[in-house]
Length: 484
Image (cartoon, rainbow, N blue to C red; front, side, top):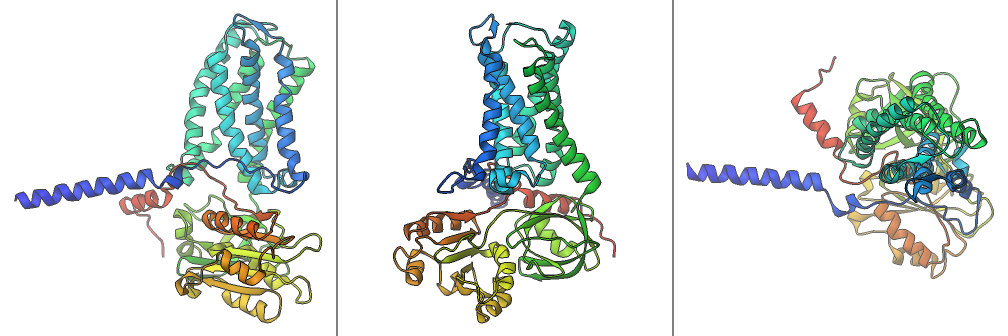
């Protein structure tokens, strides 16, 4: 009996330790990633978006610099409140995925990074405003009763914003739940705008400054309507029909034909897929693996979470998939003649290069070196297509299979290009962050000045991603009935 109790206690302790390890994750899960500023060797168009956003936010200081109140820091308190409003407006504008924004910020992946950071910084500015604001002397925006009611609502909105932003930043919250809560961020934003409009300020709402801030507040609300109501509910994207599915280990390939007009894309671009099935309708971004001239769209999807783990079983030929896109500005070939062209792919990061390898003309120079890093030859998606392209002289294929002791590192690159052999080269990488970080250092040591990377992730944050574990737990407790 005592032995049985001891074993039960050991089992319980082991379960608790496993749960703690799962919830705490690894140290790398808690690393904060800063927004990536343009890394071009000289100023380019991609600097424009961040510069305009910063300028529009900082310009508000001149509206409040002469503010008078009970406290000496009243000008800062009012200004930092406007910063919070402006950053929230910019965050909403960037969420629309408007094609005009891509060149101004350097691609949709960077657009979304700035979107997340603008949202997080707006909450920090809101907290500073609430901690510093006091009695203000100036022009009343509305009657005292209305202003007081708006201020009380703003306090509630602040707490609501803290909770919703925490749900966005903590990856412990499953993605499908986060998407629902994320849409409600417009509520505290509208309340904050109403408080800003009705509060006492150094200027009148009908003045030039009043029109300036009013226009930005309306733009923020309009952007939310465009994204959530028009694009997510009404327009939704282009319908496609599944013509083929193929599962190979933890990778699923979908081939889609358009129902109507064909989607026009460039090599390296991606699109958002929405499956018209219960529990699978949230959009997910995937790189288009087919060549621009093909009649169908091909997507290679790796099992990395709850949605991707179920897509191979959920999708059948004849099913409808909504495609929104294309997006992305990953340039696989240099605009002007350069030295070597080097493509480095890790795992499912091969997808941007699949269509490009097939679409290249054999006579086009320089012929790209494609380094394809995989665990084993059997797990290499699209290997037949790449080997065929290599035989036709479209690419120079280097398969780096770790199971064969053939890992890609600086020594391998030096053996191919020599010391300083990548000076003036056009280098493009796509794959896991660890591989990209390690090989970026290596290629720069060989003379490469700039590495083109488009690591798109619609949701980043801190903490381990438990979407799969929570989905498996809910499925085990409350299994969904499948109709056959």
